[in-house]
Length: 489
Image 1: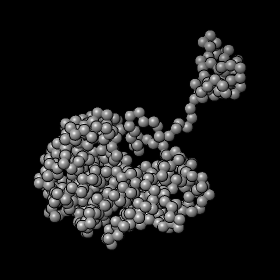
Image 2: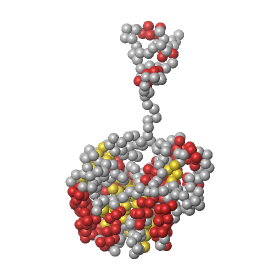
Image 3: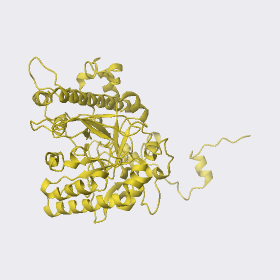
Image 4: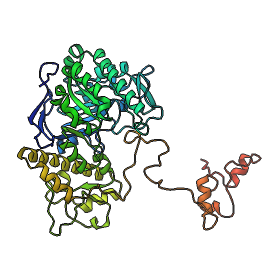
């Protein structure tokens, strides 16, 4: 087993992959001062340092969240040369962690820091030879190695992913672009460890580095993986995998085999989660948990799958906007022990959604995180008793291949919650708009919107001028009723 900086990895393989081709394995990730994480498992995906719809005290009380992924670009407001974001000057917690303190993340929750959001917003300018393009609250900026390393050393996350030349959007299929990605990433990882010396900076600060594995074919990054194995394995605490398909070839690089694998390859459904677990992923980041709660969907799947008498295909979730839930006093899922299901019923939750009450999405997020926690617990049990492959096949036969879509309006989106791409339409329709057409148009209302007329008696028969006649004096205005003044005796 390859050693970490202090001679031991924070990760132990409890049950290695079997010899039948399946790479699923059991492990345990233990970072000082943080919850012990049994794997396979998942980390929450944050926006501006928070899991959408949940406050830190709610996470601590009603969920079993062990770790979260945060993006540095979420905290960058202006160029580092012009201003210092509040994050970098905020107080630290008891462990000296500024990121935990600033985001009010519970002290026992692991924080993984990367440069870009997950999934990342496509940058119109792309990366350069010495920087990556990040999407901040004030627009796209360049993030170079020096600035990134200074930020990491200042905020002190538990886990950091070094800069990688990742391309999001069209153009990644080009062989020339892929070669440049690999070459730049290899150079940047080496520069990262030169700037943040493992013995002098990373180890004393308790920061663990997870090297990025790129979303390109194995032959293209074979040399890069060799360099990781030979030069950097003793500095690494794990791997950040941007394409789970590369794990099948990781057996060729023994020093990397026992490192924990954090998947940054977003799964589209529970079926894709099972596929990645089968390929050897230890910890997954699951962005669809946030989007499915936004849509008003309550997850209903379980592992192993529930059995139906008629053998019909089961849905992966419930659309809580449907009218059939309006008078239902059933929990979201029968037998579910989450806070939402034990305290409330479907009719109440649908009322909250229709009323646009944030509590509705709070309860959905709590429930969906609970369902996912139970899902991974059952996966670990199945791997332990050797029934994972059989149960995974049963799951594929029992459930719809895709998650359902919500039919109502998601919560109002703001910049800290959602980053739009160029020319993307608004997520919700505007609540009102100007009337159009010559027939049936309310002229008074149209004029009122335009700021030209008023309703009531003054609107009958003509317009009310916005500015009084310049020739009229005060006495004329007073006599005509422009203003009523009570004169004291």
